[in-house]
Amino acid sequence: MNETLTQLKDRFEQALVAAFGDELAGTDPILVPASNSKFGDYQSNVAMSLAKKLGKPPRAIAEQIIQQLDVADFCHPPVVAGAGFINLALKTSYLEAQLHAIHTDPRLGVARSQHPQRVIVDYPSPNIAKEVHVGLLRPSVIGDCLARILEFLGHDVIRLSHIGDWGTPFGMLIAYLREAYPEALKESNDIDLGDLSSFYKAARKRFDADEAFQERARLAVVQLQAGDEETIQAWKIVCDLSNRTNRKIYDWMGLSPEIQERGESFYNPLLLGVIEELDRLGLLVKDSGAKCVFLDGFTNKEGKPLPLIVQKSDGGYNYATTDLAAIRYRTEVDQAQRVIYPVGAEQTNHFAQIFQVGRRAGWITDEVEFFYAPLGSILGEDGKKLKSRSGEAVRLIDLLNEAIAHARNDLETRLKEEGRQETEAFIANVANVVGIGAIKYADLSQNRTSSYIFNYDKMLALQGNTAPYMLYAYVRVQGISRKGEINFAELGTDAAIVLQDEAEFTLAKHLLQLDEILSAVEIDLLPNRLCEYLFELSKKFNQFYDRLPILQAEEPQRTSRLILADLTARTIELGLSLLGISVLERM
Ligand code: ARG
Image (cartoon, rainbow, N blue to C red; front, side, top):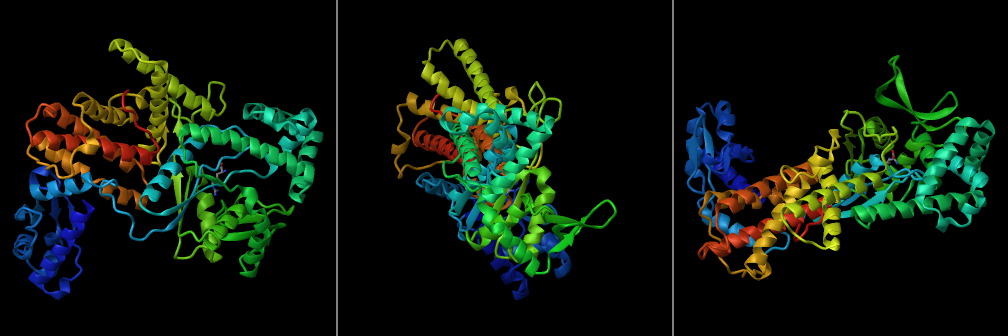
């Protein structure tokens, strides 16, 4: 109802000027959703805020405003209440017309942004040469969702995976491959990352235990940085393998296929330029051999300014240098206007520091927004970071598989209870969609900055703010269409929508809010708002469904209610798709 709000705002501004003169032009009418639906749909609190300025009691001001307020085309006559609130209730005819408009709109009334931007979303950005573990879940799911929403709103979205594909771990890995599995470097196709991950562990063991090996690993890093051909080839094999395996996981999770790998190594040729530019700008300071930038507002334990090291004393660059090069590249070459980093909250300082240096170097200007979206952790039942039984990080594949297994188990129990026979293909598909959808939804429905406890039973529950609850509401609507042999697509665009019952009004008004919710997410990048919206929608639909006959209703209610049901299903489908979750026709 964004559009409604904009219109109301305009009318209020006109009324304020008409009542009190030009000096009130541009006054914010302080319009908010009504605190209680008894009072209507919106209320304005402007009269209270003007009492002092105008030297009048708020109620008198409110009365004067409503005498000038012309909203008859979409509201009932405004009413002054309480201390001086102005209550507004939308007319039924207006709501019906709005619903009709979204019913015939494939975008369900969601407008495209009037200021489309080029947006980079930096995700999922794993460190490769290591098997993907649960730590990658939140960046993947949240990054993917934000990219989808911004793209739907008309922005030009570039998905960049800033993979950790360079540095010391590769030295260790290359040295170990050379030593233990020289043939593996040649027949890369026969190794999967499962093998590589045990190689990694073995390499780590060798590294920790043997000094000569450490030396060889260090040498491999030097060779890698020097561009030695054989070493680069070994490194490429490792990267390819990791990326291929990761891609399979992304596909399985339903992440966008548009993710581009642009890893740390991509910026190698640009690092020297970063150092030179910082030096030229006079930001670079040599501190015990290392080159650094002293940060404003960051101090060490002794209260001294903290340095951000950009080149170590041995000449090597680090994570921060690479990210500075990326900042520069993203503004200067990619011409991004917004760059979003959904990354674990433990990197808060890192991002504050590189953004500060980026700003001081002039790579971040007022024309571009760098948005770090810190992510809370996924916790086990004990409230500590989720670990496997053996105390190691949980592999992402295991987590997904287990969710699917739980979903299958729940489904098979339910099928038995309901005495239903279904094919294996049906069961496998439902378990897959529900299992993965539940994991994603559980993650997205939390405020991204908070940590949450990972629990299969909770995320798979058929009741509550879960994916299965939303999917079930969608399936209910499809059930109506099957039972009544109704093709929703053929519900004529000339069919009338009639609102009479309270449950119809409640559902209808909620359906009209999608646009407003997505506009809010566009700004604050909090997908849990969309989850909350869909949860409310499903609840309101279920109340409507439990209370009112649909297929058995007389016309014109029958068609009107079918349209409301169809709109609900389409809104859920669109909303879930923006969260990266598919729907099911039956479950
Ligand atoms: N690979 C990093 C890690 O796993 C995350 C990278 C986030 N993106 C960035 N531009 N720093 O910690």
